[in-house]
Length: 261
Image 1 (tube, one colour):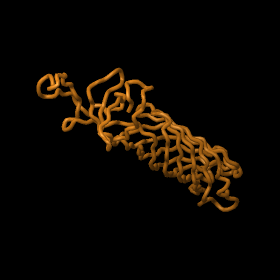
Image 2 (cartoon, one colour; image 1 turned 30 degrees about the vertical axis):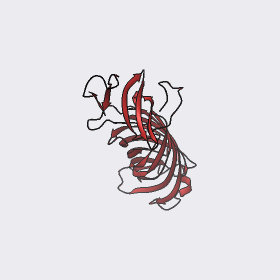
Image 3 (cartoon, one colour; image 1 turned 90 degrees about the vertical axis):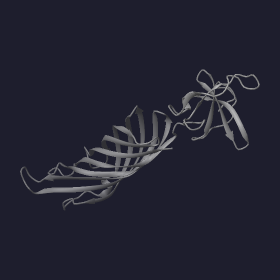
Image 4 (cartoon, one colour; image 1 turned 45 degrees about the vertical axis):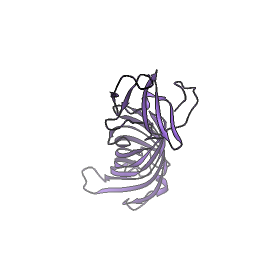
């Protein structure tokens, strides 16, 4: 809130989300004059009109004569239906939440030519935190768990299959861009192999051979549940760079429960 209706005016202070305001009816350009009750008294100042929540108040005329006792003309005021207040809306500065989903993984074993690849369904899940660079962009991190599972027939038409499962701990830096309800994102992720299962005997890979950098990209769509809670559906493609697996990649779908603060 500022002393005058311009950006370089003296700042009175920052009004937190939920501040109760009285709209005084005076405006200049994009600025409106408001009154707020503080602990040490009433303060008047100017705020940008866009920070007032849309459709949260209605225009009314004060009842009574057109002039007050001191001869000054009474003003029009805006107010909520039941009381003369409006709520200041502040843009979110961070988001956080949890996610989970499924993936289709392709694990190409370069040191086992007779079984060129494993492929099949797996799962992933974890949590995330992001910081808003501006209302359309966030930069944040994800920490989660991924399980990639696959199988491969030993011979054409054979009912005997080889199978394998890799379990990874994921740490990723994520950049996200918002366009209306759509989201586009990219991430650089390090996945550490923490366990293997079901691979056939002989010369199975080690969990460390699964570790490596991933590049991921995708898009999603956001469904607004409340002013501060979203449900987000995302699809992605990822490719891994590691020592022993070429074409180590996956496609996936994830559901995110996002909270804004």
